[in-house]
Amino acid sequence: MAHSEWSDPVNDLRHALVQNQFRLYCQPIAALFGSVMYPMAEVLVRLSEDESALLPPGDFLPLLEHYGMMPELDRWVVREALRRRARGCEIARFSINLSPQTIADAGFAHFFADELDAHGVSAEAIVFEIDEHDAASAPSSVRRLCAAVGSLGSSIAIDGFGRSQGKLASLALPSVQYVKLQASLTHHLHTDEAALLRMLEIVRVASDLGVSAIAGSVESDEVLARLRAIKVRYAQGFGVCVPQSIDDLAELPAVRMDERRDNNRSVNSMQGDASWVS
Image (cartoon, rainbow, N blue to C red):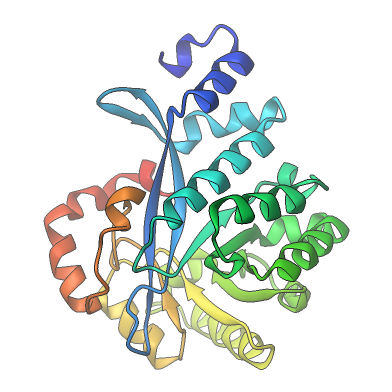
């Protein structure tokens, strides 16, 4: 059923969860240094509208947020990601976004521990992404969650970092190992000196704290070269690898990034489709 036809959104969305009508996709994150090309991948979620159409997040996440159902979706994503990770995968880590509602859910860490045991997966295989804004607006809940999942062995990535000046304190939260840089910094890296200086500052501070930087929305070899030059360790975007089904991702061998990018050029028509951006 199309989302515009939902007469009872809560029951319809809950039915979609129970019936596994959501689909997991992933976008690999490339290491710009070292021998492992794709050490992790960000998990993305879509909703199956029918056999041939997938709804992007903007079509269903606002409803889930409005009705307070994001913890149910986040738990479904975690459970399904662990189930697929248990099958084995060349990519060592899945990165999963957590909503503010889930961050405030005191029972989430216990749920995660139970799912790890049920699937026999190490907590090190999961990185949880927390938006910079959420880290600043709910510091006590974020600190509690970071400490709880960190005690199990998972790590944290602070997402969307660099939207505003300052606020570097979130990089010192428990279990933070990654910082995902705001897309606008990457977009303007080779044309805007202010963006370059801001990125250099973040990379320097993060490095001093033992946190690795991930540049998002990378779309060109020119930007990749600049990122390597300033020692950004990881990159994500359509210029690196397009999103794909998590089942297809699990079958990908770890090949050189240049070879993977050559393969991706055949599907780069997706690059202009904003609906694939999480």
